[in-house]
Amino acid sequence: MKKQTTLFGALAMTATLALFPMTSAVAEEIRLPVATQADRDTASFPGTGMSQSAVRASWGAPLEIQGPVGQPSITQWHYQSFVVYFEGDKVIHTVLKPKR
Image 1 (cartoon, rainbow, N blue to C red):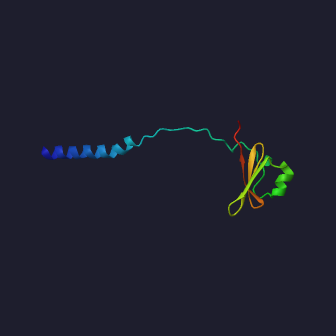
Image 2 (cartoon, rainbow, N blue to C red):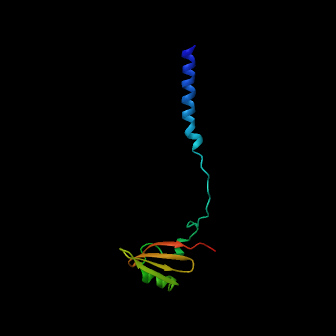
Image 3 (cartoon, helix red, strand yellow):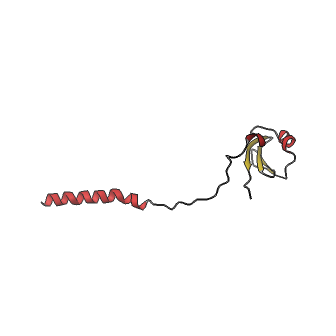
């Protein structure tokens, strides 16, 4: 009888220890609004590899220019609804500004 009680106790302890990490791993989910880049029409924004002169010819002069900064030099051109990032003279990325 003692052997059976010891076995039951060991099984109970094993089950408790196995389930303990599951009950303590509960986290609160936080949702933050994120600006989406999925809605953009690629034809209406500068594409990767375009030159600064091609961007200026298609979209006009930017509202603001920041940079160049760092090595390699990164420059930002700010337009009404998007920001164009250049490495040297070539576009590396275009990002939509959040709608306000």
